[in-house]
Length: 208
Image 1 (cartoon, helix red, strand yellow):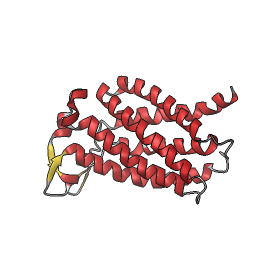
Image 2 (tube, helix red, strand yellow):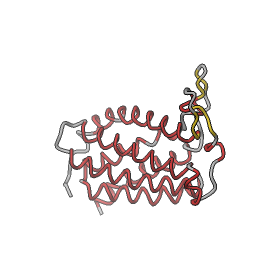
Image 3 (spheres, one colour):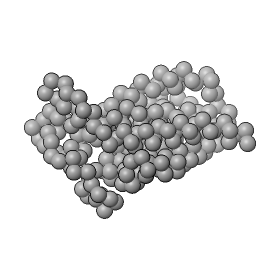
Image 4 (cartoon, one colour):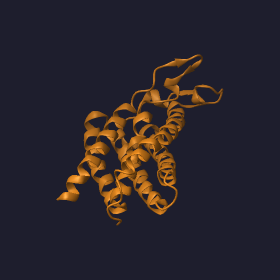
């Protein structure tokens, strides 16, 4: 019972982060910087999703990999269920698939590196996990090749200058994926600060 209660904050925050990200990823950042339209480059979901890796890594540090996987699975179930309502079934499928694969990989990488210098486990697991998450999510959510999952987003499939800068054109979702990945890397690096602050509080209880 005590273990279950101690996990509830991790599960609740995980579900909240993923649901918010699933909703926000549908909205490009509609802002112009000179000749660059950020709507061709970013969605708002890029700013919130890296927090999911922070939650996973803190749970992994505190309780060990087996319990961290439980947090991932519980957050996954709640988040996907709510995402079907807040977003679309296709977004929910894409997000659920990407989330589950990337977060479970994050748990494994973090556990392998947990005895190294303090910043390496969360940084390496977040970078690798975020990269895989981006490939899976954007491929399933917006690629025409995945239209079998559900109706596609016409705006996302429209050709636009790559990253809003280059003469070469690509579907807008490709630029979103690259832009979101760049932001995820920056935010993931910034997440080392709260991780470092919370380390003394969340000392390891046990390893599984």
